[in-house]
Amino acid sequence: MVLACGLPMASEVDPSKCPTCGEPNACGLSQGKNECWCFSALISSAALEQIPSQAKNLACICARCAAAAAAETKPS
Image 1 (cartoon, rainbow, N blue to C red):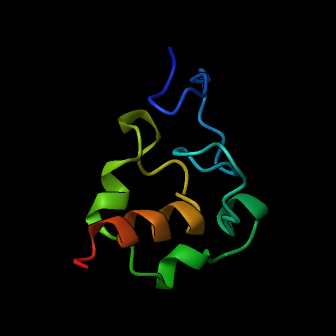
Image 2 (image 1 turned 45 degrees about the vertical axis):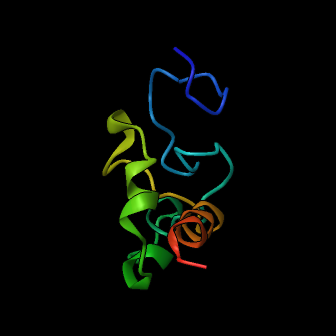
């Protein structure tokens, strides 16, 4: 299976990679910490909708994808 962005879909979700772009997501939990940057971030519903269903609650979206989705939904 291939995601809309052209990345191949792995059989297992890598919690250290953004499920939207495949780049490192800086997830604190995947690094063995008790917190993650996303715990205090405001992430738009547009960004959350981009996460494939099989990766929801398993891998954080990266800050870059979260910001890009938020920028796309702001009125100009």
